[in-house]
Image 1 (cartoon, rainbow, N blue to C red):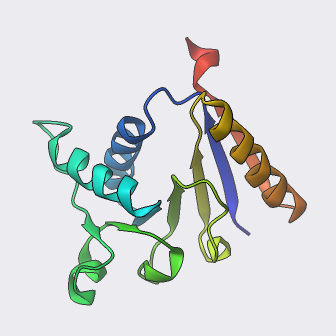
Image 2 (image 1 turned 120 degrees about the horizontal axis):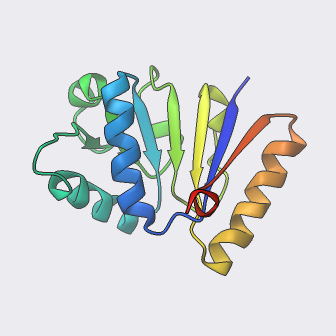
Length: 143
């Protein structure tokens, strides 16, 4: 069964995603990221530049299949584009990703923006309605 974690009050969604993906890469698990095209492009750029000391190997879903198969982090517009061995899904988009059920874990990043929070509430209800375990991580609670 898929475990879902919501990270609320993320001040910078892409910056936080970079740090989360660096941590996931260090832990060794294959990760897929789904988001709208423009956001993926920006995330791709930021992953290359966010740290002078760390390399976070990643590719876009339109890379050759042989590259996607050996790259630990793949950025895609939908789950169908992600390699079968992907264990963790990070959703940066506004909707519940189609096919999320095939992942062991889904991580949702939510800013303090009212629209983003409203969309997150819809996604939360979707997951809860399917009986999935949901964890809540409020970044503001630690501040």
